[in-house]
Length: 152
Length: 130
Image 1 (cartoon, rainbow over the protein chains, first blue to last red):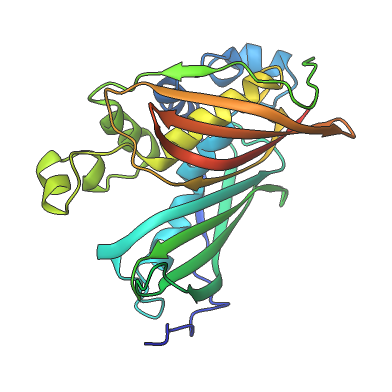
Image 2 (image 1 turned 180 degrees about the horizontal axis):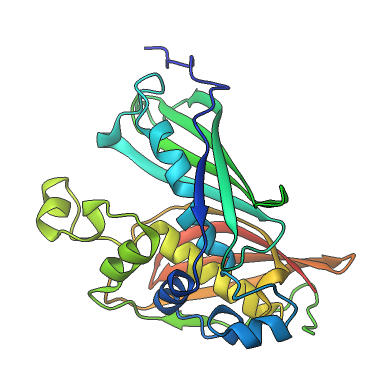
């Protein structure tokens, strides 16, 4: 069965997220980050940041909400029963600091199938991109999210 | 400033997530997929038990790469990973890495996250500014 590729190039509505100091602290604690630039305003400013700075991987907090409608879009049509998050890339630009308002837009980059190994059915690859910019229009992060659906 | 040379091993990061780490990560990240927090649900969909969030483990990889570059979060410019295995709570994760190349003030580091023999994150590549 050929995989549905109609959603390639589709974009979903932009979401916005205001970064907050205590949310950064909560994230940093789980991942075990104790660098004071993530926790203390004065330490962050002394290191040249506008305010407490988010750890790079905090980007999932503000970029994933833009991706959610793409994941569940029937036009994309991913079968969640056999889907795994196969790969992820982030490229960071301007740091995200407490008080920043970050806007993220998700887009479907690619949908394709790859031959299954040893006679298994083909796997479907669904690749999405999120681009996040801050209130000044500077790019904060660009994410590439690869989901694999086994047996399309 | 960190000095890194091609072939160097970065400092190993060892972390043992506890039983409730996926709950705390769910709260911190907003990802409440029940496979991470509900053992009954996880077993019903064929998993041995609840599993760690892949992006939590990627967070540990980012932490190890940032520390290798001297600790400033600005130094991590790019990180790409493949999620290859399921991570289990209450099992030690070891993040190891080797500097692949250095040039133009940037180092590229190959990173792996593993629980024992099970490599949960493979083919990870971090680009850090020195």
